Amino acid sequence: MKNSEWFSWLSGLLLLIFASPDIALCQDAISDQPQAITNSIGIKLVPIPAGRFTMGSPASERGSQEDEVLHKVDLTQTYHMGATEVTEHQWAMVMEEPFRTEVVEIRDPETKRLVKKEERQIKNPKLDSQLPMTGISWVQAMDFCKRLGQLPEEKKEGRNYRLPTEAEWEYACRAESSTAYSYGDDTSVLSEYAWYAGNSREAKPKPIAQKRANTWGLYDMHGNVAEWCHEYYGEYSEDLVSDPVGPKRKSVPCKRLVRGGFFQSKESQCRSSWRGQVQGLAQPTIGLRVLMGARLPEREIEYAENGIGQRFVKINAGRFMMGSENVDDEEIPVHEVVISRSYFMAETEVTQAQWKVVADSEPWKSQYGAFATDGPEYPAMVSWTAAVNYCQQLSERPEEKAAGRVYRLPTEAEWEYACRAGTQTNYCFGDDASVLADFAWYSDKEWVIGGKKSASDLSKVAHRQPNQFGLFDMHGNVDEWCSDWFAAYGPAKTVDPTGPVTGLERIARGGSFCSTQHACQSAYRNPINPNLDGAKPGFRVVFTSTSK
Image (tube, rainbow, N blue to C red):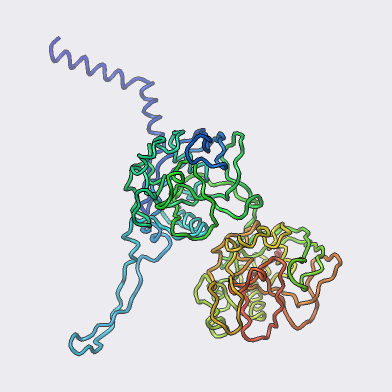
């Protein structure tokens, strides 16, 4: 066959092959497969296919723990996982200012006299960092995901970010493997994939992606920093489960899940199935890796937002036992209370930023001095009368009047009902006071009048775990004014109690950053003279709607 004939024959054959419907379908299928993407702040996201896997570890696996019960899991939706942990650079782009202004003094080199002052833009050093972001709480990690999804380009693309569930994390880590590690069982190979106690001379995180990735393109899944997962720690089911999202808070309220081991972990803590259970607080060994995919089922909470950006939670009508025999004389007798009407309660205390939108003043600066930390996300600490005036002014704003929202302070009964969130224990999460730090800012020492500021200083709102109703800071941070005058409880059942008509002291609830564990209990009552100088409560508002 001559060369010209050979090339003619080959060209015809190739044309026939690629014109085949089966080949065309194959090419279309390939193009329809999810592809890796890099988002607007440089996070590379790797597609993880839907599938079934065996979660947990066999008892024969070296380092296996009792809580790693083997069970089948179906993940029914494809998702994208960050190829690495979120870096300090990426964190700063979402959560911090890229530059800060600093005033620099220019002096004569000989006389040292001041010549002039210049403003200079100082770059945030995190913007040059490829270290994983650590020292962040679970709440902060969740907030990062939320804010990332609100960036203009991410919003335009319809991308939803969140923390991975424990099952999604392990499935992605395994990358179709069933061995102790994604690459096999040989611990002598671990140093090629992870930073852990065996190869980290310095006890600190290392730059991302310095080790080998697993077969799905994910780096540092076996070590560098531990990574927050979405849910609470809980026991596994032995049955097949689909898209698990962990236990309800009432089951095991005290621990959050982390996965992956960190730079000081033992070999056994770097396994694909290892489960870390910690409080949701910031730790230097824990970071995060984001997932882009479908939203998880929301808790059955109804939210509302008003014209100044305050978010509210609907508290449904119900009944509960008010008071406690485990606190002080003021909290007895325990008695039944009926809340006959639903109401909306603010997710957090009124912040200084929200206060200034309505009242345009800063009373906490003159009244409370060192006790009141200044900042837009900190609670506004004001007198009872000022809090009531705020509610009235907020109600009079045009957008609130148009929506039929009337604001007020909660009654003491409404406050305790919302704080308990269906519980009858000392705290909204149970009776174990060792867990309180996961939910509250408080003092671990007895407060001394006139003494130094507590080691547990005032915090920004919503930096601890919410209760079952979705309310933050119901234990600690600042005491919160209620509408009632103080009076002793009676034994009789009451409906929508509002307290006595007159009195000498108003009620504050919840405890504060300088309260002990005792004063942070759900039932604890703090009577305060509303005219007393130095009283330092904050407050949260509720509203009822006049619209039909």
